[in-house]
Amino acid sequence: MRVNVAIIGGGPSGLLLAQLLHQSGIDAIVLERKTREYVLSRIRAGVLERGIVDLMVKAGAADRLQAESFTHDGTVIAYKGESFAIPFSKYTAHPVTVYGQTELTRDLYDAREAVNGKTLFNVEDVVINNAKSSSPSIDCIVDGKQVHIDCDYIAGCDGFHGVSRQTIPPEARREYEKNYPFGWLGILSETKPVHEELIYANSDRGFALCSMRNERLSRYYLQCDTNDHIDNWSDAQFWDELKKRIPEKFADTLESGPSIEKSIAPLRSFVCEPMQWGRLFLCGDAAHIVPPTGAKGLNTAASDVHYLFTALKQWYAEKDHQLLDTYSQTALKRVWKVERFSWWMTTMLHRFPDQSDFDLQIQSAELDFLRESESAQASLATNYVGLPY
Ligand code: APR
Ligand code: PHB
Image (cartoon, rainbow, N blue to C red):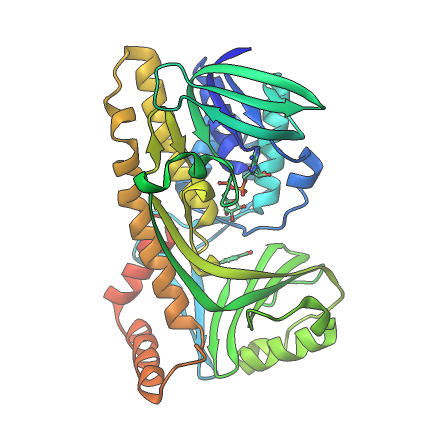
């Protein structure tokens, strides 16, 4: 089999790139290790920057998003039992869009099937061959049969645990990592969100986040120990703790109910440099991870896809490989700014086990400054709604 671009990974990065390439007449195949149902069973964040919404429109996959999503013009920061709002429109030109990543991925699968895009599921033992040559290829096993794919380029959209990043020789790769001493315990419940916008809360018991998917579907998170387990948390215990971590005016109106999903995720910052190796290009979680505090995982995968799609489109249209040659440095320039913002939000809003009294005073002063300073709020808003591509 031969394609222009072979895409490893059928998550949001791989699917968005595949759809954009299709719209430009560039032939691609998506190789996904799991099944479509498995991929769509993952619960992920739900805040979209303007950039990914525009890419979904360009990909021809935005109809449901535009019909069912809603926009948020700001967010609420809570600490010391009080709260203040940061109005994005006072500082930026765009709001953010609230729409579940799972639904966005579903829309991309539907769009791919509508154009009969080639997608292979249950793909095993993917091996990338000759990435540094002008004729790379992929070998893999699908339903027990050996499959060989010749291609011009390979997009490694296979997430943090994928094969793509590992294809870059260790001596050619530099990895930066920071593991946080806590995790996020998240639940989904068919209840009315406690507030019409998100609430990020720093409390002396730890971080809490109040989010949502729609008017009858709420998403809540509690900072928890790295070795905690969902079996340690009944629904009642979760709701009790959440109410203790958010201001009374919200806790008093909080609608609780049975959880329909409960999970714990670790928090880490991670960047791999470079993000390309010959004709292999890394996108999304294959190249970088952010703590979810800034809601930047999916959004930064989208900016990578934008840069790679633009570069591939230039090559196939004009045989100009300048953007392909500079993809890694272009993508990393924005990646590091997002890493910084995500680290800053995480550090400001969480309680760290080893925090000294001085550290707590600094954190409190950071939040005081954010509450009082328009320039501080403008900085948060600018980063939160999305830096330009
Ligand atoms: N072969 C084929 N597919 C693979 C392989 C492999 N060797 N390894 C991983 N995959 C698939 C996974 O099953 C997954 O569906 O690659 C996909 C990677 O998807 P994500 O992990 O979602 O990463 P990405 O598409 O970059 O999306 C980034 O989605 O999961 C969130 O937190 C993530 O918000 C971030 C965004
Ligand atoms: C979510 O709705 O899951 C969500 C929202 C904002 C975040 C993280 C997660 O920062």
